[in-house]
Every structure is written in C-alpha cells, then in structure tokens.
Length: 392
Image (cartoon, rainbow, N blue to C red):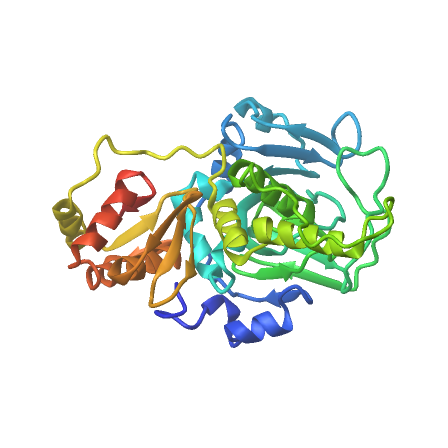
C-alpha cells in the first residue's frame, strides 16, 4: 500500500506514519493489540514445520530441555519423522525467509510499507510448543513480532543494551543479565515492535504457538565500506593516481596535512560521491538472495498480451524474493533498481516503476491508467518475462 493510494496503515491504529516514526521507530517498544485481527490465513504451523524439511530453506531447532544438553541447537533441513519424536514442551523451530517461498506471506509485507521496503530483510516464522523459547536475547535490527497462532508471553526490558554479554559455552547467544520491565501476552493479531538491542524473551503458552517476525536489515559500517571498496575496485579507473603538482617545500620525512587532504579528496571523488553511493546502495539493497529462483519465460510477452492480462487480472504481484527500489531524479525521472540491475526511466514508465516498487501486490486498475503508453507496457512485459512480476 503506497502512501499515495493509502496514507493510513490499519496496523498502526490511530497512529499516523510520522507519529510512529517520530515516537517509536528505533526509540522504544510498542505493543499493538489486535493490530492485524483477524490474522489472515497465510500459513499453518504444520506447513512451517514442513518448510523446515526443505533443503532450500534455512531452519533451526532450539530445545531448552529434553535434549542431550540444555539449549541444544540443530540446523535443518530436518526429516519429517523428527517432529513425532520431539517432547511436548520447551522446543522451538525457526524458519528464515518464508516470504521468499510462500506468496501469501510475501504479500504480508504491504502491511509494513510505512517503513521503506529497502530496509526489510525477511520474514522469519517460529513455531513452538508449550514453554518453547529461544532465551533472553537481543537483535541488532528492528523487528515486528506478529502473533499468528496461539499465545506467547513476552518479557521486555525498556532500555537497549550497548555491549554484548552472553552466557559462555552455549550454541545460542543468551544474555547473562536480563531484568524485564514489561510483561505482555500476545494473542493472534497482536503485534509487538522492538527497536534494535532491546532485550526480549518470548515464551510459548500452549501448543502450536506461531510468531511471524518481520525483520529489517541493518548493514554494519564494515559491510558498507567493503561494498563501496569492492565497487570501486571493479569499476574505478586504474589510471587514476595520486598527484601533487602544487607540492610545497617541506621536510623529507613528513607526510603533510596538504597530502592527507588531497588523498581524502581523491577517495571522496572516487568512492563517496552521491551518485557512487546511490548506485551501490540501490544494487545492494535489491540484490536477490541466493536461495531464490525466478521462473523466467522463454520469451518476453508482447505488450498486447500484457494489456489483455491487465484487463483480466485484478492484481499484479511482486514475485517472492524480487526486490525493487528507485531514486528520484530531475523532471520526474528515476533510477530504478530491480534485483541489483540499474536502469534510468522517465515519463509514464517511471510512474509505473514507482507504483510497482511501492507495493508488493498492485491493483491492475492502477497500472492500466498508465499503460496505454507502449513503453510502459513493454516495461511491465520485461518484468513479467523475467519472472519478477506475476499476475494473480
């Protein structure tokens, strides 16, 4: 849901987008009761367990009790027979990237479009039986914890922790010290927002407790610098060298402030210009995950075929795992990024591209208003042919 077509988000209740961003985003936790009630029928706990048996999917099993050692960690894929052997309490299965494999879960992201899509990482789903949990811990990213099935009690500290201090000798990172200030029980449709580094501990109440975690990426400065350097190494000019035609007389052993300033300016020009960072960020944040395969067509559909499909279908959806973003330019033009690939667009093509990037599921009537234009139709056809967009 884009800000243009729908300026409100039901899950925020009476809060506006700006009020949430100003008061809570990366500042303090927020409990949103019945924010997504009734919770849509996207996936069942048994289907999540089934995904953990798929070799393409990253999954983990954490057993606080009932295993050979406390807090035992096992990694998938698992055999289906495993689940009949598990104890009745104190275990949790976690499946990462469910939005990349289940269209209905992927569509859930539109509910969180009050945060830019390029910040979204993935949707993880956890299924736990009574008292199942992963211990008191912190995440280095923002997360919305959506209760989808059953109940889960959350213990929260109201202040972030700055330094890691974990219990040694365990396969998972449990906090040594945890003093909760809030105790909340979430039921289906409730959502808990947590900023980075706020300690939390979720404990399942009863069987088949299912929590959907919408996590947001937070690249480290090291990742950013490594990406910029790699881009500069692959695209930079090998003939560009340090030069100092204005060199002044100085001591032979000294590196002068002027030399440092000149070298810094050269690096900024090569690696830290707005256009250089824009291109890196656009490509980096839209690059698809390695576990995603797109169903490309043998031949790009003709514009006439796309026009007819837009008339017959009610929605056009982003394929699971596809990523889009754009940067505004002059005169209505944009730089559009699709799965790491860059293109410069203008006119109605740019408007269609922004519409596609602003929503996971797009009503076709919104696109039809812009696609009498032949170039806009061809643009949609290229994305459909590449497997990045699919009709309902």
